[in-house]
Length: 166
Image (cartoon, rainbow, N blue to C red; front, side):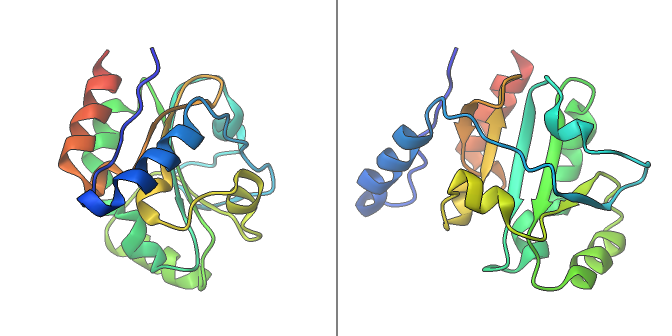
């Protein structure tokens, strides 16, 4: 069952939101094999990026405050609850590599963050600039089931949790 969400920010954005959701409906996200593990508690290779398990993919870029945009601390409870059944992939194309490394240590975030030095995720997938649309729930084949960042929208969080609990 394909779950998609129309993320309604305001009534004037409805057409744009609908267009983005329609564009991403069922789209396969290509995961770059040039990314490196930036932060990880374990020695981890990139197999997490290409395995055939459902995953949540959160992409950040250098246009925004990387650490702020990822909201790593907010993800911690979701990762702890669901990481046995779904993979979580946090990618960042940072302005400052040291900034994200220092930030992740200060909040004690122990899940992998992948460095996308060349913005492959953004370029190959033509990711939207809007940070609200740079988070995806993907099926085993990396097809989009949900688009939108649940850390910015409580209704969307409910949809993600419902999909993860099914």
